[in-house]
Length: 544
Image 1: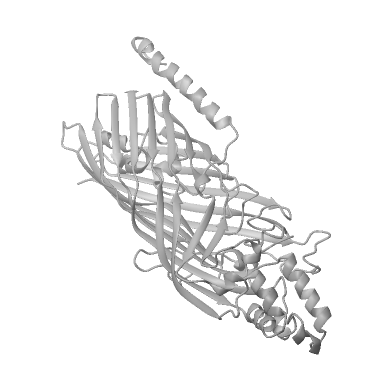
Image 2: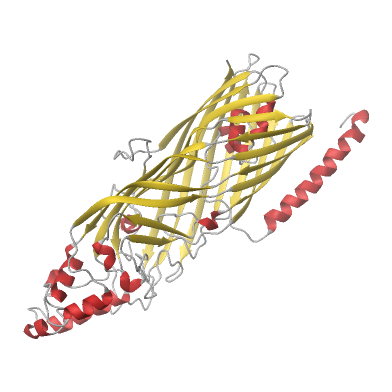
């Protein structure tokens, strides 16, 4: 029970807490889509509290979660952090009753499941190593500087704010090879000059400027199970027979490519590889922290977004099927007329490579939170946050030349073969997080966190490049502090989610509409799957 003389003073903070909790519950209760990849593994203490730390930002990690929290660090501090993560997406493919893609009724992918998944990382200045890793590792470093008695605190840190590295190359026949054989999206903050100012005993404000290296890599095989390809393939089989058709030379050239030039909707048509970076992409974090007492605090942070312009290299590989097909058409009498109407190239080289540019939006993020201590050794944290993932409406790759393989996609709406447009259609997000902290002794603290994340990738937009359904994240953590000021914080988290997308359920995955050829590699199939993410981290903080 609180001492009698504190009851009146404590009542106001707890009334404010109740009001704030109600507001956060209202925000969380609305229809929303929550996080994409933000705050998966930035700081172990934050992880263990479900990332509900805006009102109680941990150490030098305040630079990310709420720069105003730096004002609580007296003297000079250094933090070393290590992270490890294992990301395991999985999927299975089923052919529903009545399956038909332009007369083709048996997809060889049907009845299969994805295979083993390894991790990969993007190294600044190097790119994506070919090594297959059992888990992805990362390290962070943070510093803070404060002169005793000064209201100013300065800091900087290195940390990962976005990290996805999926490698499905172990099994060359993995059915997921058609939708992201290897995928890397990584944002590494290289430096983050920061300052916090203590306005009064209870109020602090802060600003940080994270300067990040943004990396993006995609390596995938391609196929286009489209009705038009299926119909033309059946027409070729009927018109050409087993030995061709001599009349075809005076017609449209459907037989001119031989058997290799016969269109098959389920065949691999080629592959593409991208590797791009934005070496130094700055954003801004602005935070405020109000701590009227040790039992109650409120915090808010704005994390700015950016339009990251990435540049790098691309390679397109083309299988013989489409090249033989267009060469056959152009070798006939009437074929060139039809081919030019559709904008088909006269040939498709086996390899095309060059330079590519892409604008990759980084979503702005707003988070508000509160901390409440109902009793001395027990602390509850609740946060609500919003992220602007609607900016990922589509990804546009601009190449330095016309890509012959993409000229074949003009009929499906890809009007400019020097560009590749991949629809995304993600949603703006609202999310809420919960954390519990119990100080067992003066040296030992136990923590637990819970995050029910509704995905910003709606089920009608999900695919195997971004296999992120609704996630439930559960975390535990342990903190140990010595009398000399050394602190060790450790955390482990487990995230899991499932999806079940019937045929035509996601037009980034399995739609059969004529103009959804780019890109629906599993058109007409039912796709069920999910993802499991295990990650852990340790931070050692000490004065220097």
